[in-house]
Image 1 (cartoon, rainbow, N blue to C red):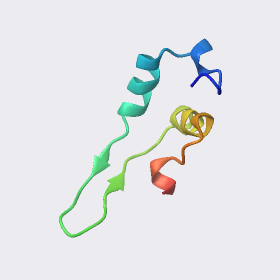
Image 2 (spheres, helix red, strand yellow; image 1 turned 120 degrees about the horizontal axis):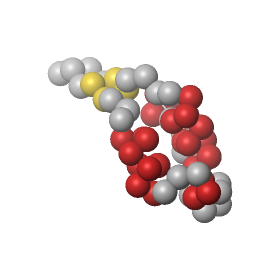
Image 3 (cartoon, one colour; image 1 turned 180 degrees about the horizontal axis):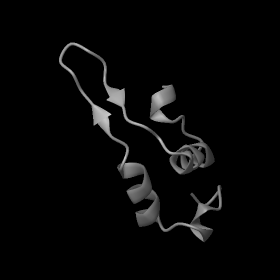
Image 4 (tube, helix red, strand yellow; image 1 turned 90 degrees about the vertical axis):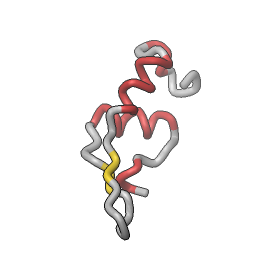
Length: 56
């Protein structure tokens, strides 16, 4: 978070809250499905150097 300079815009709590609202659906016998990811969430994942869940 410090390397990406996100601390200027977000507190750690704000960042975790933003990423926490991504929904994950589980169906017996199938893989997990991830709900829609917003552009803001995608930006945060990329800034942190993490691949967004829908692309994994």
